[in-house]
Structure formats: structure tokens, C-alpha cells
Image (cartoon, rainbow, N blue to C red; front, side, top):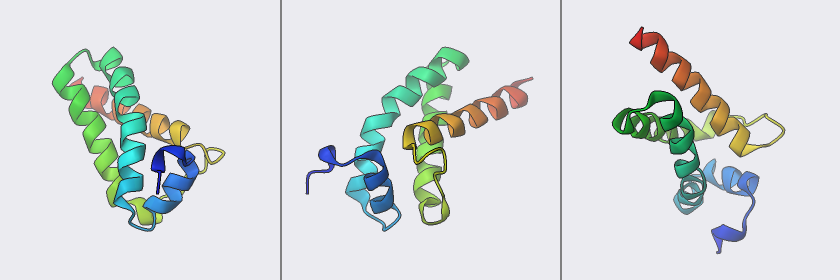
Length: 94
């Protein structure tokens, strides 16, 4: 099966069925984008990488009961979750 040809929502539905290659494809699609977004705010490579990895691990761990509602937009969901984590990060820093 060629996961690169699948849509994000198809991959997400596969992830919910414990399909690791589908998750890996989503990871490949979004990890760098999330990192660039995060590093632009935190200005620390280690913290940015940790925030992204924590988010993506959390999504995998909670996959069976997560509902992506943002118009079935996986990218928007990931960005919204990262925004929430960035807010928490800065609240802990201050």
C-alpha cells in the first residue's frame, strides 16, 4: 500500500486502527512543519524538538479516542494542538 498517495484523513482513520505505517506517513508530513512553527516561537532547538515529539507521541497514544473535528483537517488539528502546547510552555516559563 502506498501511503504517500492517501489523504490525511484516510491516514488518520488508518491510525485509529493501529496502522503504524499510516502514522509514520503523517509524522513525515507534519513533523518538520510543526518544528518550524515551534522554533519560531521558542527560539530553542531542544525545546522545540521536544514539544513536537511530545505532541506527536501523544497523538499516537490517544489515537483511538481522538476526534479530528476541524473540518476533517488533520493539519489544522495538529497546529491547534501545538498552539495549545506553546501556550502551556510559555506559562510554565513565566
